[in-house]
Image (cartoon, one colour):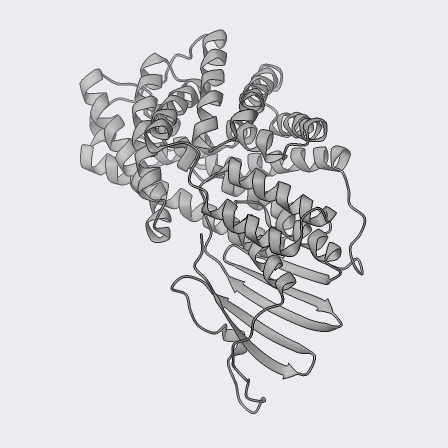
Length: 459
């Protein structure tokens, strides 16, 4: 939760002011507001924001911090602004929120924000529910601000020990899902537990959080490579990916592609760049572990023998249950979370048998999106309850992890292996496209807001 912020104003004329919100230790004035040349010198001072504007800023920061795409954040804010009798335009990026709110006079504000890459479905669904209540007029401004503060201040639903254990269970399930055998499942579970500890170790520091892909890849690979010397050779890419899967940024890439497809060019490019940087950190972490253990030169490459489909399906079901704790999901949504994981996996496996090795990600994402929208309409629950756990089964993180190990291995990489990273992007595009088609068919549309020009009204 962010610390209290100050509002700095620039009075350009009698009808407009520009504000910069400094959170935490990031206190200062936005560069766009610095006095230059012969332009009128800005007037800096502090003044309280109108409650309505404060509500929109706090809600936008909270929704953004819940890892929602920019178009969803902007759409929610636009709907709430309209209910408040304001004409608003909103622009969200990875690290700041800009908004122009009009009610006679125009007020443009820029809020600098830190971003959180940890999934918390309980917080996400609570904020989306509150946003809908605000847009419907069932919650007032003061009560809305109070509820936002309460939601942000709530402790994690599940404790550290349970989540670390759940990371281990899910790591083993993912190792089986991507074709691992029993030994890969066991190693994946161990590496997953290590990743769970790393997850908690990076929660309180954004600086360390940005390095967690490197830390998880290095420590997880180190554990796997050492075990390969003790237990004998096994399929390292599948075991490692299983363990670190929740820290691999494949979902970040998928969200970035979704934003690009939703005309959120600036946010999508920034998110894609951040995701690719995290993939690079993952590669460096694996390479460091290889150098420390001399794994590439001393241990032969092994391809796992997949477990029987019924066994894998049972493990995916168990992994879906573990996701409830990993994603801090509401207990009442456990069935939907497990169902989404099983549906996504089963659909992808069926398409693999029909069209080949990589299946049909677009079709799988479309079916997942359809199920998520129908579930949301029927139950009134938030869309991410099914969308997030289902996408985790489809996101192409394993291809990137496998490509990294092959590129730093002792054998020359083939052209097909070198194209693995390109396939990661292609699969992310297909996933985003499938979800967009499902949205076009099943999403409930709000009428245009304001003058119809506000960002976030579409997508």
